[in-house]
Amino acid sequence: MSKKKWKIPSSYVIIMAIVVLVAILSWVLPGGAYEYVDPDASTLQPIAGTYHEVDSNPQGVASVIMAPISGFMDSVDIILYTLVIGGYLAVVMKTGAIDAAIGATIRRLKGREKLLIPVLMLIFSFAGAAFGIEEETLPFFPVLIPVLLAAGYDTLVGLSVIKMGAALGVMGSIANPFAVAIASRFAGISMADGIVVRLVLLAIYIPAGIIFTMRYAEKVRRDPTKSLVYAQAEENRKFFLKETDMDNLPELTTKRKLILVVFVVSFLIMIWGVLAWEDLGITIWPTMGWWFPELAGVFLAASVIVAVIARMGDEEFMDTFINGCKDLLSVAVIIGVARGVSIVMSDARITDTILHFGESLLVNTSSVVFSLCTYVIYLVLSFFVPSSSGLATLSMGIMAPLADFAGVGREIVVIAYAAANSMLALVAPTCGLLMGVLTMTRTSYVTWMKFVGKFLLMIGLLTMVVLAGATILMG
Image 1: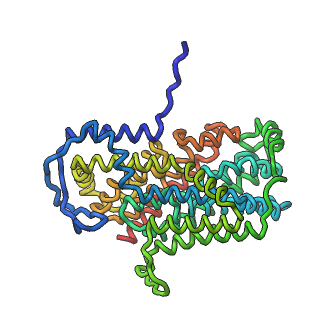
Image 2 (image 1 turned 90 degrees about the horizontal axis):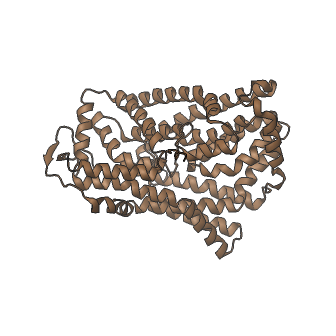
């Protein structure tokens, strides 16, 4: 009888295991509390040196069972927003506007395929930075890889254009609802906080990724034997060129162009609504102070507008929208489950005890060292909890207040988290999407690591330099 192959537990299992661990710790650790700058504020900022012990409140089986339920109740705003985003993206994708835009770009650059690499990487990077496109990239692999193969490149170029292009955008997220928005929510800051630093990172990531991909692509085009997948090149060409469906890409009609305008404008409105314009010295328009309820309303309205433009019937619209919500239901569930960890800690009165332990470690630590350690910690955590939303919900309640003790802005923690989590999603075998894409493109994990390893090491070092610089300037 063969042994059953061990596999890494899912994010849900890992997070529930942490809930159980926290419940056990509540019987061991003493209760504790800090004094806060403003106890009535929505974001509690602990005052260093004010920790004192209080009676603990050990958590039992009932608390563990209720943890995800309480997590849902406490996160209803971000969960609703996530579901609405899923519905909105589904409605836009249903119209064929995104596919048509890609198809129009390919046709316009016919004969100048070399330009496909920077153009498409910019498109996927923007999508990653604006709304965290990940699973949504899957339909583009069977469409774009044949095009790039026909142009003389290999499958790794297609992987880099789509997968890495989107990931680099997510690493420097402007308004990604599944990473920066959730992390900011649980860090108690605005999504606009730290946006300048994230833009600086994007200005590094995207050109670096394009240059890296184009250099490799040109090397392969000139000498196909230089391809890391040269041994299976002929097999790949037969498989992918046979599967191509380029002729069936939709046309970029006036209707679809209008839908794309609505799509872009909706995200611009989101950024406008959350930015603290007064703090930036801009008084031309008011600071709206929008957050998840208002943003959900924006995207719900945009969904209806897109449906009207596309002339969808009410049944088709609702079916599409609800199916889109279903696609992100797993994200909503993991947010609630992960939030349960913080609730159990808070109910046990050990959150401040753990913060005090962190404060003790940070007594002689500089703000720069804290920022760099935060990035490294998130690299490790992202291996075990690859879900961006799950990791943000799980960790921000601890990591963000620790930044207060180190004299570091909480936005630095959010930036470090987003950059680390998305970079690990490009290499961690625990990331189901990555492994699925490698299987889809007939690429071994070892080959992919050989392709991206040195580049991502360089990106990691550059990220740490920017984090250190931002910490110094903000200090």
